[in-house]
Image 1: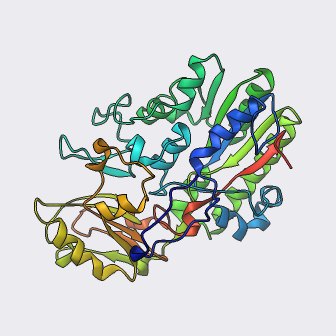
Image 2: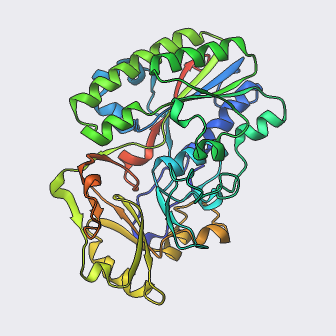
Length: 382
């Protein structure tokens, strides 16, 4: 279940007490393969289809372009992603059934306590900054299953097939890199149909890519959703009554217009600030020694546009999960800034301004970012 968001003094968004967590999704499917799930009927094999960036609210808002998926999603077919609501943290949680406070991937960019280097936790593994075997601290579910004899597969884009992030989260799976979304869907269906007892992870990043570039309210995003919807329908038909499919996502998306970009250059918001991690809608702010309290106080002026939390407040509130390991605590910023509404924060002392061209964004605590689908297809269909 989701970690509870408290205390009330922070006025954090409330989650339903019975909300299904993204960390539960793969275990639920595994149980269905063994005939022991209380949520899903038994299935001969299973597919977890992850559509990067497909928030439940995004799908509902554009349901005319995703008619098959929208019709298949009942009101309760929703899960809640983890915090931060970003790909690195969420996919790790999905694939390990643990929260960021345990697995240690606490956002998009984070500081390595031992070196002081701020690293990219999604695609920064391959320069040696992060060890896939140790930085991600939880055992991947597919590694555990493969060790017990279950055939496990992952079908993704070729560039991700041997990435450090893949090694950190999908060890134990037989990896297939396939460029075309349609070909990825067809291969996953074929594997599941011909390999009894198998569990397959199917990943589609295309919608997220379009959303970042054009926004989830754009025509381009609608066209990408139509292509995805057609593929999901074909997957459902190919799965038939024996292969169970769950369609889910790592996060939703919020479009941030240029005039809602908050630039925090030289001034009170950077006094005592040593490093910036996270991403524009969820900053990890790392203070200079002895400056954490003053930095937190300065950022409280942003409380109308963001939830501002000191590290201990965030941990006590459970936003990183019910448990935060000591080794993970030091990776979390001294101050966390999670954007409300349609805002995003940029350090305008940084020379590279290209990230400001990003329209669709995520990482924070809003319903648009945290509610993701839990759509049942094939043998799991209602």
